Length: 307
Image (cartoon, rainbow, N blue to C red; front, side):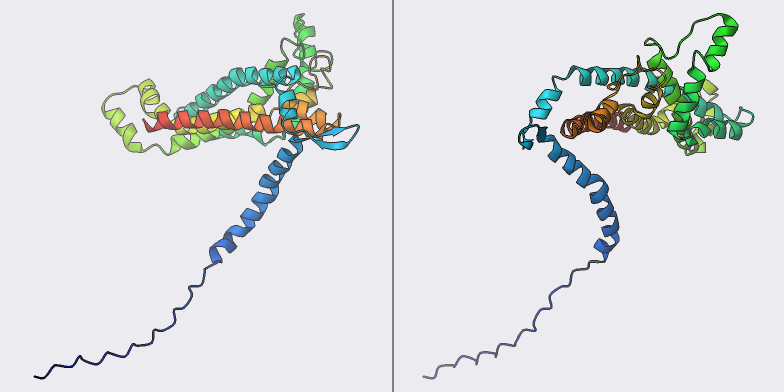
C-alpha cells in the first residue's frame, strides 16, 4: 500500500524591507513663525507673571517664595476691590450706551434714507483713528472748568459744571471712551447689516412690513453675532481702562487716585512702589476675571444666536 507524499513546502519568499515613512515637516515650517511669536509675546510673559506671583521681595532674605500669599493678600485689599467696583460700574453704564448709539448709527446709515451716509460713516469712525493719548488730552482741555471749553460755557451761562468732580468723573471718562469707540462698533454692525440677503427685504416688502418691522424682525436678529463680538470687545476694553484716567489724573489729582482702576493700581505698584510681585498678582487676577466674564457673555450670546 503506497502513501501519497506531502508536497514540498514552498520556499518562503523574502519580504522587501519596509521603507520608514518620512514625516512631512512643511506644515510645521509654515506654522513655526507664528508659534515663535505667540510663545514669545503671550505665553512667556504670562508664565513669567505667574512665577512672579509666587514670590515676594523682602528686606531680609530677598526674593522669597511665598506660594499663594500674594493672592490671599489681594482678596483682602480694599483698594483693589474699590477700583474693580468702579470699573464694573463704568462697564455696566457706559457699554450699553455706547453700543446702543453705535447700533442706531449703523441702522441709520444702512437705511438708505440718510443723505451723505458715506460722510457720516467716515466721520463717526475718525475718532477711533485718533490715538487714545491724544483723545484724552483733547477732552482734558475741553473739560477744564478754569481754562477750557467748560469754563467758557460756565462763564456764559453762569453755571458751575465741573466734569472733573467726583460726581462726574466716571461720566466724563465714559464720554471720552464712547467718542473713541462708537465708530468702531458702528462699523462692526454696519458690516453685519451689509451681508443680510436682499431676498428678506423683498419678502418683507411683499408682505407689506413697515420699516420698524424690518428693523425689529430682520436687521436686529441678524446683528446678534455682531452684538456679541462688540460686547466682548467692550468688556475687555473696560477692564483695561488705563489711558484716559491716567492722563486726566494731573488735571484732577484729588479725584483720580493711583488706584482709580485696577490697571492703574498695578502700574503704580510696579513702577512707583517697586512691588513687582504684587503687581503681577493684580494683573493675573484681572486677566482671569476679564476672560471669565467675556467667555460667559460669548457662550450665552452664541446659545441665543443658535436658538
